[in-house]
Structure formats: C-alpha cells, structure tokens
Amino acid sequence: DEVWEEMQREQLGRRKVKAVDISSLQRERRRPGKQQVAKVKQCNQSWSTSLRALGAVAEDFDSMKLTEPPTTLIDAVEEIPSGTPETFLAYLQRDINCLGEDNLSVRLQSLQKLGRVLVQSIDRLPTDVIDAVADALLKPLLKRLKDKSEKCREVSIKILRSLVENSSDLSAMLPYIFPTLVARLGCEDLDGVAHLPEVARPDPEQKPTEIARPVEESEEVRLALAHFVASLLARCNQTQVYSYVDEATGLLRAQ
Image 1: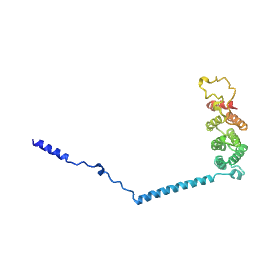
Image 2: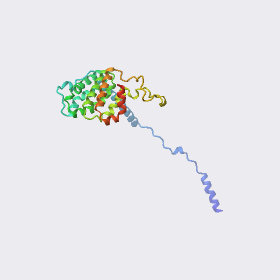
Image 3: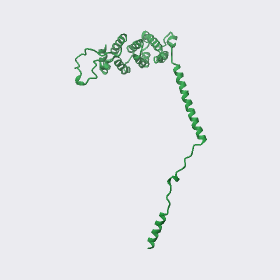
C-alpha cells in the first residue's frame, strides 16, 4: 500500500509540470549593425568598380585591333636571319600573329610576306628551320583555308604546300592536314548518299552521275588544293598512306 501511494504521488507531480514553449528556446536573430551594413555596401561598390574597369579594358583591347597592315621585321630586315629556328621564328612572329586579325588587308599582307619568305626563298632555309616553322604555322594556315577571302585561302595553300614539300617529316602534320582537306573539299560524302539507309544506297562499283557540290567554290583555290594534295601524297610514305587511305581516296576523287 505504501508503494502504491508513493507511485500515485509521483504521477500527480508529473501532471503538474508545465509545458515548455519551444519558441522561447530559440535565439533572437540579431539585426546587422551599422558597421556590417557599411562593409556590405563597400564590397558592392568595389565589385561594381571592378566590373567597370574590366569593361574599360575590353574597350581598350578592341581599340588595339589593327586597322591597317603594320610594319614587321620582314619589312625592316633585308637579310633573312636563318641561323637558328628561334631567331627565324622571332623574325616571322609578328606576321604569324596578324593571321588572326579581323581586318582582311592585315591578314592578306602578312600572308603575302610569309609567302615571299617561305615559298620564294625557302631554298635558302635549312631543314631544322623549316621544320620549326611548319610546326608553328601549320594550325594558323589551316584555319585560313576557311577564310572569307579567296586570295587569303589561295596564298595559305601555297605556303602549306611549300612547307610540306620541304619538311623532313610529315608525321606530326598529317593528323591535322588530312581532316582539314577532307572537310574543305567535301570528301565525307562525295556521292551524296550518306543520308540514305543502307538498303537504299547504290553498290560501291556504281559511280554517281553527279558529285556533290564542293565546299570550296573558287576554281583557282580548288586548283591550288589539287596541287597541294598531289604534293602531300607524293611526300607520304607507304605506311602513312595506308593510315589515311580513306581520306586520300576521297581527296583524289574530289579532284
């Protein structure tokens, strides 16, 4: 009985415990002080100032774009410095950079100056210099095959042909040259049947009556490309031709 009475008293004591309001346990959110607000404003002002500065730099960069052909070392130096690859590349570097300019006359004049050195005077250059120039100029010249100017495309092809004919090794150049030529001459689908299902395509021995329209529309540039392809395949060894036999076949058919 005494145990029972004690249990009842404990139960009554628990009932008298008041419920605790959870919201009273939460901390009151402190409002930002004046110093903190000032720091935020200062950060925003500095950020906007930085953005305005970047915009000014971009405007200055646009104003630095060439509007007329510059005078380069090829113009200023009469004797070609062909002693070392480094010296010769420094001699050409300004004109190589000009190939990426937006101004047509700037690109064309630099290409013509490079052509005077690398086509007309290439017999005076040692092999190691030619190899270094081919490595530095390959990609910029291949990009110019898509130039809007027909003359720029033609001069670029002549320089590429000269480099291919006089370089000691074409192995590093072929992975870039073949895909570019295939795309430029539209050799991916000469028969115009790639869009057809297999069952609807003609047999391989059946020649198409009409070849798809080439990407390069200029006859002069296509002629320069034909000479370039001939020089390229003449310089390739048997293993290199086998490695690019599909591309080479397409290029020959496109001529």
